[in-house]
Length: 367
Image (cartoon, rainbow, N blue to C red; front, side):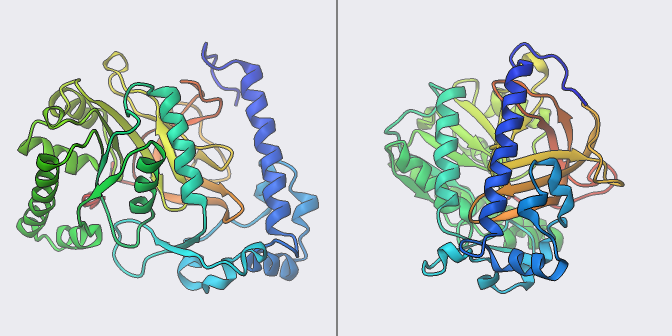
């Protein structure tokens, strides 16, 4: 389906982005299926099936020739199965996915988290040029421990000339308490987290903040966030509705600090939100860091079919880096398919929420 005409996104620019994506796909396929640089998991798959991906996959659309990535593979396969031969002699970092309980999915990494957040820093400069002052220090009010976000936000602060302060937060414990209906214990834990943040903000010169929506709201109940010196907030980790965005922009930040919503995870990196505005009802649209990652909105019953624009569907993620090749993974989120815009020349995902949350209650916790 041809994207609707958008004055910010010409047909030529959209076509150029598609051509660049296809070229990037060929590069990543050649890397992961090469006997010199490739990944054992994918090399074994090709040998067992007799497939010839380097010859058969020449575009993003051709990825349909390969199996959909399954999250169980990250839980069950040994880590050495995911080490590209080009990286065999290098120790790797281990990052876990977000706030679920049970055995977590683990992703190994070398530099992707650094590259992703360097790209995100450049995106901030293009789309929010005055929001995150260089040289400012940051506070990371989000998950610590084995999560990529903790290391990545610190790298982002350092790239922009600042240092980063942290609080301790275990989102898996918060979610467990919420799932077990220990609501008072969950509130007490959140208060403990906000107590730490309030103390740091009261004694250190901090200008930028990462926070999840619920923690930002809780912080705003205890202090005047802009008066604490915060100029901009990079916000993500759980779903946000337009109503939540309006409250954070108008009530918590009082339009005196900039809110930058993001959608991301350990497997993808960051999809940045276009600047939110009351003029469009605080609608949220995120654009993936293409070509390193691609988001599509697909029919939940027929995931090989992309839904039409402005229709709801399930999010499909493809990650295309030298560290990780993850084709057509079906996320546990749903969204509205949105056309290119806001300086991005590929589709966006709007109003992201947990899959099926319109029909049933879901537990998200604080991250």
